[in-house]
Image (tube, rainbow, N blue to C red):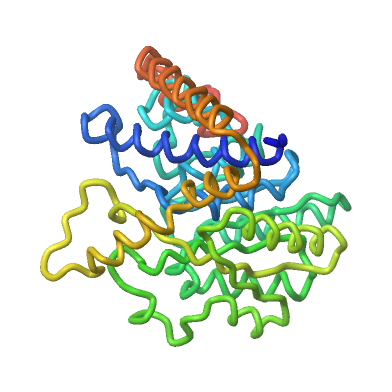
Length: 326
């Protein structure tokens, strides 16, 4: 039985994987400007947590930001067009790879600033509390961001005011090339929650079902007015920090470590095997995979056929109240 929740979970994971694979190819071909940070390998942490949200809940992401909007249900055509810098993109070609925002699905913003989304998500939660609505704020950040001052300030404020926010750390083990063992005095990120008197939970970030279970509990707690939760999803990025990044000197992670995750801890493979073991037929799985592949092809065509913003629109969206020359 392939129920609607399972199908949507698998669909979103596939959408992220294929989007990132095609995006990498297009970036190398020179069709996507700027930098490109792929989230291949981290699909379960993203989708498992986003599936625990309602459509009206909000979310903030990171510089590794393509997967988060897709996990929340964003349109692939508009995302691909944005990466290409086109007028039809979610930010009209002005955000690019690291600054995606789409209020239609609750994506409040993503930032190249490490930890930049943490205070923003906290502010969204404060807004929900002031407005007396049961909206949740989900905040994604990496292991490197927990050493930023905004992490401590935000968690302390959220704890004091019992804000409806879920802080989810995608701990992939490395801040660019620096391992967590070399940058954190306390390597268990979930234990940092103790300092703020809030729950801290560690979960396998390669198991989408476990991430969904843990995040659902945190979301329910927040909606009850009991405050924030810190979730540490132990995950792994399969590729380099940035596509095309060349790291001089000795490798910062061993080939065996990378192969272990790719061959035995691939979140999509693990979930596909779980679905098969649970009675979902091969035909249903391959049909969905074909559907997503076709969706990606259409998104690429849309992006390539869309126009770039014209010079006369340069000042558009810069002011909430446009200035009129006297």
